[in-house]
Image (cartoon, rainbow, N blue to C red; front, side, top):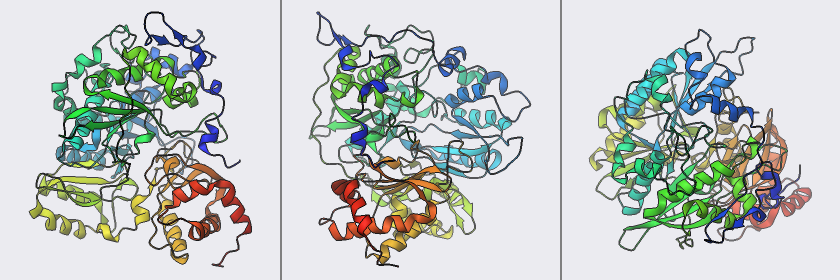
Length: 629
């Protein structure tokens, strides 16, 4: 394992990431005599499709074999049914620490919450459902939605139907479709922030799967009692009409149910994030599509800067997989944004790699073609030239924790939650606190991209009461939270995640304590470092953007990644493989010592590592003698 910058990995031949033929290269573009926009890719040669692609086709738009297996006496479902269940928002899991011939199957259910919004009635419902049908807690994800763990198969229908009937959904929270649309969580009452929230809901509604399988299976074919709230909130945009509008350029498929997805849906999951210039609180560069609101000096919406090709997932020891930050594609006027995003999705749908799932994300298509040729491919569907990227203010990172004025006379409060786990444990009673807060004040909340929560629309006269309520439930005020904890994220990993190779959520608290103790000894007590940890290389906690990351590569073993940006605009690079859990201090001490000795004024840790590079750090480590021994 060699320390390799992501840029170096990205320099590998594009042929490795094609759709299994050599057609998906810049040379494959053919220019039409009629229009410069009509540049298309050669269709890959016909070949036998993969088992998973066949399963999607034979599922009859996400019905089978799930529909019948839900009613058997078995506590679990087959692998095929499980693949289809993902599209309905659920993962089948088992506790890997319980050994036995019979697995204790249970189900994790993930909500769909565009822009992270959580109305008070929905929180009350999932609080009750987690207590009655789950394991008693809730978990905020890194994509601004809640998960309920520990549901038995017999309870799935009750839980999902209850969520659907209150105007929420789990549809598309998982699977090869557009996932939960992220947004800056700050609920400022300014035009740009309000546009960001509004269009997050537009895009969520635009790319929703249209199959009736969801209502057939969970509601016995009946209509939901309350339509999805975000869909109703964006009715003025005529999203259904925009979805089905057919320009004749290949975006709309000849399919009776799914005009955008067809019967094979997408090659892999698809992620969208929306923000405003300067606010990178959501890791905008990690999305398949990143959308940035552009307004004029009067606050009127002009359009959007659009970036493409971000993604975190990779596989250990396979350099044909890598994390990638998105490229700037260009500016799109507001009236064209839905059609342009449809064109991007169609490009990935038709030309993404369906043969090798490890290379199926759109980032590999963008990487293979290069941003200029990918832009041309999108334009061939879009039918218009994409304008140059508009200049914007520099990105900053803010988690929006603590008290803030919204801009309408009310306040919002960012409540830090360690690793997103909402639970009651001893004197720490966060779950009860949130329920009491919702019941007393009836406030809406927003889940943040850092697994925390924002409570919005607070009357200033209620500030003291809310602080007292939180204190009574053992919740620390923000000033008592270590900045390392506030910045950190970890995935759930063991014991329930089937992909985890080692610990993450359960280990990171002790790791942060050890890192803080080491930093204090090295006169870095006031330093803040953005640290992330995952139990496997799939990247759910977005480790490859962090200044310092630990990526599980075996039992009690981690890769160490360095050099991500403190404002989350570039990927880190792998520095060390197979670091044993107990070797944390001996690994970090020389790196921190070099940082203390050679940093530039006000230089952040991630920027320092990026500037000096792996070779210089390795050389320093070879010559370093501990001053703390």
